[in-house]
Length: 341
Figure 1 (cartoon, rainbow, N blue to C red):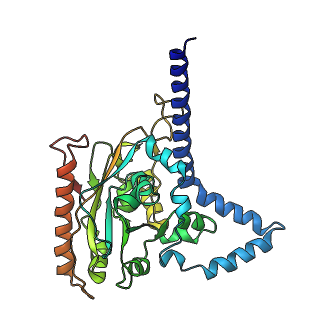
Figure 2 (figure 1 turned 30 degrees about the horizontal axis):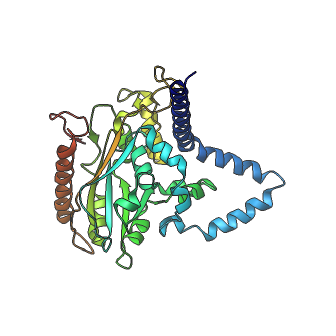
């Protein structure tokens, strides 16, 4: 075998190894997303009835003393955010972060993220890790990816979320991060939430936004600028089974959403090791996250409904302008448009 053939063999081997690492990094995140909470709950249940129960008692005492941390800026692990694993996660799709303008770290911002998709891969990769270079793209700005407050009530699971840079999306948490005493914070809120996940459909751009005005009110009460963020491709990496309105399956999804804050989506992508079969792995589709221009917002202690509606309309127009400006660059048709519900 000549040297040229040897080089080709080594390149193939290296490519296969890198592809394996990418697959495993995404697989672990999906399993974490789906199973880590229940597994932590089961583990704690076992510890309570084992000889290790004193360890659980000590942990609970510490957890109570640490109860407010998710609402006080969290406990982000810089080390965890820079894990090499997240770079493999990024390259699987790949996921890229795009800046349209500089953001002054002397101000605070609400990054309104769209769409939710099934698992919000783009939100986590861009703002929960530093794999796409947020710290270099927006120097001196600190991202805080928010999630349901209930997630922080599960022992051990809460500590993983905190290390991953997540904070509670509760009112008190957002107010703390956007207070006038600190600056350079970017609070990332996935506006559509669980309701939008149920509408996630490939080649469609359906956003749950018409009645979502709480983030506008928070921006006004804290004087934080609104920044539209759109991830092109977020809806394309997974498909889901859509159940007929009124069917027992759809009713069950909506009941789960009402009770525990999220709706279980029955999704599929490709197989773990085969792109020609169905499985839980997302498709290799690019996700391009575009951070738009900030909308300056005055600080109003008790904004009226009219003021909230005014800035909500301004925000929607800014988001639509962002979508229309970049849709063709990232593979959509000129006729594609946002559908707001």
